[in-house]
Image 1: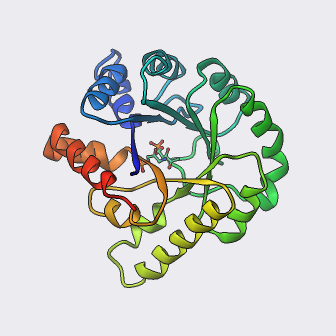
Image 2: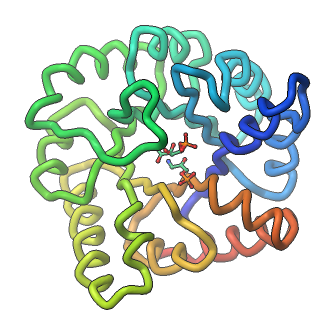
Image 3: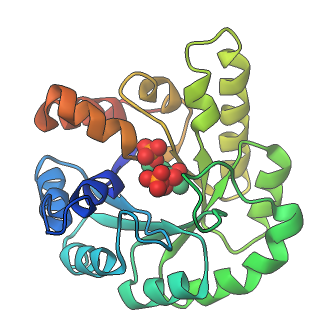
Length: 244
Ligand SMILES: CC(=O)[C@@H](O)[C@H](O)COP(=O)(O)O
Ligand SMILES: NCC(=O)COP(=O)(O)O
Protein backbone atom coordinates (compact mmCIF):
# COMPACT_ATOMS: atom_id res chain seq x y z
CA UNK A 1 0.00 0.00 0.00
CA UNK A 2 1.22 3.47 -0.88
CA UNK A 3 0.87 6.27 1.68
CA UNK A 4 -0.76 9.49 0.51
CA UNK A 5 0.92 12.65 1.77
CA UNK A 6 -1.15 15.73 0.97
CA UNK A 7 0.91 18.79 0.11
CA UNK A 8 -0.61 21.90 1.72
CA UNK A 9 1.41 24.54 -0.15
CA UNK A 10 -1.64 25.70 -2.10
CA UNK A 11 -3.72 26.11 1.08
CA UNK A 12 -0.98 28.41 2.43
CA UNK A 13 -0.81 30.26 -0.90
CA UNK A 14 -4.51 31.06 -0.66
CA UNK A 15 -4.11 32.10 2.98
CA UNK A 16 -1.20 34.42 2.08
CA UNK A 17 -3.21 36.20 -0.60
CA UNK A 18 -5.05 38.00 2.23
CA UNK A 19 -3.54 39.43 5.39
CA UNK A 20 -5.25 37.03 7.76
CA UNK A 21 -5.30 33.36 8.64
CA UNK A 22 -7.89 31.85 6.32
CA UNK A 23 -7.77 29.15 5.14
CA UNK A 24 -5.89 27.91 8.19
CA UNK A 25 -3.18 25.42 7.26
CA UNK A 26 -3.34 23.43 10.49
CA UNK A 27 -7.14 23.17 10.27
CA UNK A 28 -6.79 21.79 6.72
CA UNK A 29 -4.16 19.31 7.86
CA UNK A 30 -6.64 18.10 10.49
CA UNK A 31 -9.44 17.83 7.90
CA UNK A 32 -7.26 15.69 5.62
CA UNK A 33 -6.12 13.51 8.52
CA UNK A 34 -9.73 13.06 9.66
CA UNK A 35 -10.54 11.84 6.15
CA UNK A 36 -7.89 9.11 6.45
CA UNK A 37 -4.81 10.75 4.99
CA UNK A 38 -1.66 9.57 6.80
CA UNK A 39 0.84 12.15 5.57
CA UNK A 40 1.16 15.91 5.29
CA UNK A 41 3.81 17.48 3.06
CA UNK A 42 4.97 21.09 2.98
CA UNK A 43 7.66 22.79 0.96
CA UNK A 44 8.68 26.00 2.70
CA UNK A 45 10.44 28.14 0.13
CA UNK A 46 12.94 30.87 1.08
CA UNK A 47 10.51 33.67 0.14
CA UNK A 48 7.70 32.05 2.19
CA UNK A 49 5.38 32.60 -0.76
CA UNK A 50 3.17 29.84 0.62
CA UNK A 51 4.33 27.76 3.60
CA UNK A 52 6.03 29.80 6.31
CA UNK A 53 8.53 28.75 8.97
CA UNK A 54 5.73 29.17 11.51
CA UNK A 55 3.49 26.78 9.51
CA UNK A 56 6.23 24.15 9.70
CA UNK A 57 6.47 24.59 13.48
CA UNK A 58 2.67 24.51 13.91
CA UNK A 59 2.29 21.40 11.76
CA UNK A 60 5.17 19.76 13.63
CA UNK A 61 3.33 20.40 16.90
CA UNK A 62 0.09 19.00 15.45
CA UNK A 63 1.58 15.87 13.94
CA UNK A 64 4.34 14.83 16.38
CA UNK A 65 1.90 13.34 18.94
CA UNK A 66 -0.30 11.67 16.28
CA UNK A 67 0.44 7.96 15.84
CA UNK A 68 0.68 6.77 12.25
CA UNK A 69 0.68 10.27 10.73
CA UNK A 70 3.83 11.62 9.12
CA UNK A 71 5.05 15.14 8.41
CA UNK A 72 7.26 15.45 5.35
CA UNK A 73 9.14 18.73 4.89
CA UNK A 74 10.66 19.36 1.49
CA UNK A 75 13.23 21.96 0.62
CA UNK A 76 16.64 23.05 -0.55
CA UNK A 77 19.18 22.34 2.21
CA UNK A 78 20.18 25.92 3.03
CA UNK A 79 21.44 26.67 6.56
CA UNK A 80 18.03 28.18 7.36
CA UNK A 81 16.23 25.05 6.12
CA UNK A 82 18.53 22.74 8.09
CA UNK A 83 17.88 24.73 11.26
CA UNK A 84 14.13 24.45 10.64
CA UNK A 85 14.44 20.67 10.32
CA UNK A 86 16.50 20.56 13.52
CA UNK A 87 13.76 22.52 15.30
CA UNK A 88 10.73 20.63 13.93
CA UNK A 89 12.24 17.14 13.54
CA UNK A 90 9.72 15.96 10.92
CA UNK A 91 9.28 12.26 10.24
CA UNK A 92 10.74 12.77 6.78
CA UNK A 93 12.84 15.44 5.11
CA UNK A 94 12.91 15.52 1.33
CA UNK A 95 15.84 17.43 -0.09
CA UNK A 96 15.29 19.17 -3.42
CA UNK A 97 17.86 21.07 -5.49
CA UNK A 98 15.60 24.12 -6.07
CA UNK A 99 17.20 27.54 -6.26
CA UNK A 100 15.64 30.46 -4.35
CA UNK A 101 12.86 32.06 -6.39
CA UNK A 102 12.33 29.00 -8.57
CA UNK A 103 8.68 28.78 -9.70
CA UNK A 104 8.39 25.12 -8.75
CA UNK A 105 10.61 22.04 -8.53
CA UNK A 106 11.85 21.07 -11.98
CA UNK A 107 14.67 18.53 -11.59
CA UNK A 108 16.27 16.09 -9.21
CA UNK A 109 19.75 16.21 -7.66
CA UNK A 110 22.78 15.50 -9.80
CA UNK A 111 24.99 13.26 -7.66
CA UNK A 112 27.86 13.70 -10.15
CA UNK A 113 28.24 17.30 -9.05
CA UNK A 114 26.35 17.45 -5.74
CA UNK A 115 27.35 14.27 -3.84
CA UNK A 116 30.12 16.11 -1.95
CA UNK A 117 27.79 19.00 -1.11
CA UNK A 118 25.13 16.59 0.16
CA UNK A 119 27.33 14.26 2.25
CA UNK A 120 27.81 16.52 5.33
CA UNK A 121 24.18 17.67 5.06
CA UNK A 122 22.89 14.11 5.15
CA UNK A 123 25.05 13.22 8.15
CA UNK A 124 23.90 16.40 9.96
CA UNK A 125 20.23 15.57 9.25
CA UNK A 126 20.73 11.98 10.45
CA UNK A 127 21.38 13.39 13.95
CA UNK A 128 17.78 14.70 14.08
CA UNK A 129 16.31 11.23 13.48
CA UNK A 130 14.41 12.40 10.40
CA UNK A 131 14.15 9.97 7.49
CA UNK A 132 15.98 11.47 4.53
CA UNK A 133 14.66 11.35 1.00
CA UNK A 134 16.35 12.95 -1.99
CA UNK A 135 14.53 14.24 -5.04
CA UNK A 136 15.77 12.38 -8.11
CA UNK A 137 15.10 12.06 -11.82
CA UNK A 138 14.43 8.48 -13.00
CA UNK A 139 18.05 7.95 -14.02
CA UNK A 140 19.78 4.67 -13.17
CA UNK A 141 23.21 6.25 -12.73
CA UNK A 142 21.76 8.79 -10.29
CA UNK A 143 20.01 6.01 -8.39
CA UNK A 144 23.30 4.11 -8.06
CA UNK A 145 25.05 7.19 -6.70
CA UNK A 146 22.17 8.03 -4.34
CA UNK A 147 22.40 4.49 -2.97
CA UNK A 148 26.00 5.18 -1.93
CA UNK A 149 24.90 8.23 0.07
CA UNK A 150 23.27 8.36 3.52
CA UNK A 151 19.81 8.86 2.00
CA UNK A 152 17.08 6.45 3.13
CA UNK A 153 14.75 7.07 0.23
CA UNK A 154 14.50 8.74 -3.11
CA UNK A 155 11.51 10.71 -4.33
CA UNK A 156 11.13 10.25 -8.05
CA UNK A 157 10.34 13.58 -9.73
CA UNK A 158 7.20 12.64 -11.65
CA UNK A 159 6.67 15.72 -13.84
CA UNK A 160 7.75 13.88 -17.00
CA UNK A 161 5.64 10.88 -16.02
CA UNK A 162 2.58 13.15 -15.64
CA UNK A 163 3.28 15.32 -18.70
CA UNK A 164 3.58 12.34 -21.04
CA UNK A 165 0.77 10.35 -19.47
CA UNK A 166 -1.58 10.52 -22.44
CA UNK A 167 1.07 10.62 -25.14
CA UNK A 168 2.26 7.79 -27.38
CA UNK A 169 5.74 7.66 -25.82
CA UNK A 170 4.45 7.26 -22.26
CA UNK A 171 5.21 3.53 -22.10
CA UNK A 172 8.92 4.20 -22.52
CA UNK A 173 8.75 6.88 -19.81
CA UNK A 174 6.83 4.55 -17.48
CA UNK A 175 9.46 1.84 -18.05
CA UNK A 176 12.19 4.29 -17.05
CA UNK A 177 10.40 5.20 -13.81
CA UNK A 178 9.82 1.53 -13.07
CA UNK A 179 13.45 0.61 -13.74
CA UNK A 180 14.65 3.44 -11.46
CA UNK A 181 12.24 2.43 -8.69
CA UNK A 182 13.20 -1.25 -8.87
CA UNK A 183 16.93 -0.54 -8.95
CA UNK A 184 16.62 1.80 -5.97
CA UNK A 185 14.89 -0.91 -3.95
CA UNK A 186 17.47 -3.49 -5.01
CA UNK A 187 20.18 -1.17 -3.74
CA UNK A 188 18.44 -0.57 -0.41
CA UNK A 189 16.65 2.71 -1.06
CA UNK A 190 12.93 3.02 -0.48
CA UNK A 191 10.98 4.95 -3.10
CA UNK A 192 8.52 7.86 -3.00
CA UNK A 193 7.13 9.85 -5.90
CA UNK A 194 5.69 13.26 -6.49
CA UNK A 195 5.01 16.24 -8.73
CA UNK A 196 1.97 16.71 -10.95
CA UNK A 197 0.39 13.42 -9.91
CA UNK A 198 -3.40 13.46 -10.01
CA UNK A 199 -6.50 11.27 -9.92
CA UNK A 200 -6.03 10.28 -13.57
CA UNK A 201 -2.37 9.35 -13.62
CA UNK A 202 -1.79 8.01 -10.09
CA UNK A 203 -3.13 4.47 -10.53
CA UNK A 204 -0.57 3.59 -13.19
CA UNK A 205 2.25 5.19 -11.21
CA UNK A 206 1.51 3.16 -8.10
CA UNK A 207 1.36 0.00 -10.19
CA UNK A 208 5.16 0.26 -10.07
CA UNK A 209 6.04 -2.15 -7.24
CA UNK A 210 7.10 -0.75 -3.89
CA UNK A 211 6.21 2.96 -4.13
CA UNK A 212 5.91 3.77 -0.42
CA UNK A 213 4.56 7.31 -0.58
CA UNK A 214 3.20 9.83 -3.05
CA UNK A 215 3.05 13.51 -2.14
CA UNK A 216 0.39 15.37 -4.05
CA UNK A 217 -0.74 18.99 -3.77
CA UNK A 218 -1.41 21.11 -6.81
CA UNK A 219 -3.82 18.82 -8.65
CA UNK A 220 -5.36 17.42 -5.48
CA UNK A 221 -6.38 20.88 -4.27
CA UNK A 222 -7.87 21.71 -7.70
CA UNK A 223 -9.75 18.40 -7.66
CA UNK A 224 -11.07 19.22 -4.17
CA UNK A 225 -12.42 22.52 -5.51
CA UNK A 226 -14.03 20.76 -8.46
CA UNK A 227 -15.38 17.62 -6.77
CA UNK A 228 -15.36 18.21 -3.03
CA UNK A 229 -12.75 17.20 -0.52
CA UNK A 230 -14.41 14.05 0.86
CA UNK A 231 -14.89 12.44 -2.52
CA UNK A 232 -11.40 13.36 -3.74
CA UNK A 233 -9.63 11.98 -0.67
CA UNK A 234 -11.73 8.82 -0.85
CA UNK A 235 -10.70 8.30 -4.49
CA UNK A 236 -7.01 8.88 -3.74
CA UNK A 237 -7.04 6.49 -0.80
CA UNK A 238 -8.76 3.81 -2.89
CA UNK A 239 -6.04 4.10 -5.54
CA UNK A 240 -3.25 4.04 -2.95
CA UNK A 241 -4.74 0.99 -1.23
CA UNK A 242 -4.51 -1.00 -4.44
CA UNK A 243 -0.92 -0.12 -5.26
CA UNK A 244 1.58 -2.83 -6.15
C1 LIG B 1 9.33 18.75 -4.62
C2 LIG B 1 8.07 18.93 -5.36
O1 LIG B 1 7.90 18.41 -6.43
C3 LIG B 1 6.98 19.72 -4.79
O2 LIG B 1 7.25 20.25 -3.57
C4 LIG B 1 6.53 20.79 -5.67
O3 LIG B 1 7.62 21.44 -6.20
C5 LIG B 1 5.62 21.74 -4.96
O4 LIG B 1 6.19 22.97 -4.71
P1 LIG B 1 5.39 24.27 -5.12
O5 LIG B 1 4.02 24.11 -4.51
O6 LIG B 1 6.16 25.40 -4.51
O7 LIG B 1 5.32 24.31 -6.61
N1 LIG C 1 6.77 16.20 -3.68
C1 LIG C 1 5.74 16.58 -4.55
C2 LIG C 1 4.69 17.32 -3.84
O1 LIG C 1 4.75 17.47 -2.63
C3 LIG C 1 3.53 17.86 -4.53
O2 LIG C 1 3.77 18.20 -5.84
P1 LIG C 1 2.50 18.74 -6.69
O3 LIG C 1 1.41 17.70 -6.56
O4 LIG C 1 2.08 20.03 -6.04
O5 LIG C 1 3.01 18.88 -8.08
